[in-house]
Amino acid sequence: MSMQTAIRCLLVLGWLVTTDVAVAATPPVRIYVETDLEGASGVFQFSQCRNDTPATAQGWSRKAMEFLMGDIAAVVRGLRDGGADEVIVVDGHGHRAFLPELMAPGAKYVTGTWGPEVFIGLDKSCSGVVMLAFHAMMGTPDGVLCHTQNSVAENRYWYNGVESGELVQTAAVAGHFGVPPIMVTGDEATCREAKTFFGEHCVVVPVKKGLAREGAMLYPFEETRQSLYEGAKRAMAAIPNCKPYTLKLPIQAKMQYLVFEGDEKKPRLVTKEGTIPDALHLFDF
Image 1 (tube, rainbow, N blue to C red):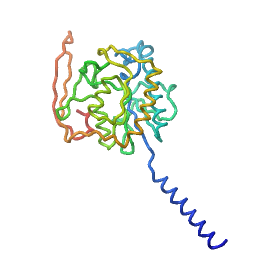
Image 2: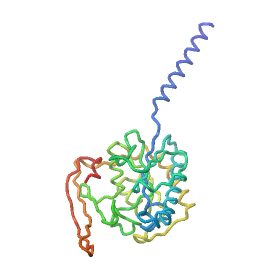
Image 3: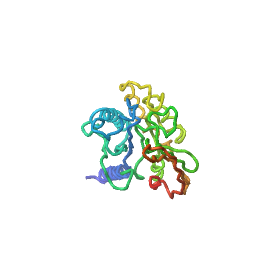
Image 4: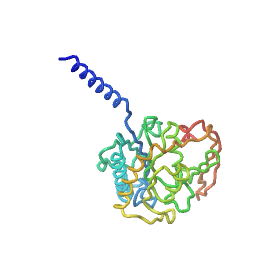
């Protein structure tokens, strides 16, 4: 082998090694999808979202789970086609809204019961958080199934003087790790709430329009799933422009809820105030 050929071989080998190192050093694009059920396509009554009787568990609410899985499938496809290397989808509706036989490929799914960590798998390695099938905060006039954490006790929460719902709670936890909200899906009121708190770059996809708390104008599934797919692709492109949502620390918190007393179950409003050290302790309050 001539000296010139040997030098060329070394240069090529060096380029290959450098390229391999550069590729290995590029972190995977990991997207965290937190789901609820009330904001899924076709869902508009609380009875669709509760499994507390055998009838609802096997009937109306199971159909809602099927609707949710269809929405998830569209979003997962859009995220992957948009460049996501890994997608983790977490069951946030009481940890029992997923149907394993309908899990779309291209993601990992977390459901069931686990320890004290609320958002399992959410950390600084994530490139963005998607809030899928969410609902507006308690008291939203045109919010389908609007509530914050507990629809029976009608909980309401204020953080640093601003009333906030489950969108903010989820985004604040993600913001603790520096992870931005990149996409929100639900009814039009939920999407409006997302824009208010997260800004114009967060992609929103409305799948229905609220007429009352249990009344909605529904859109055909074929249309909502296409919108969800396209929205997920846009969300991937929006990541560089999306900013983490954070709360000023320590968080000055207020909570209001109803307790039901006596044989007549007469409601009484209770107010609680306190300080929360950081977003990871929001759900301890």
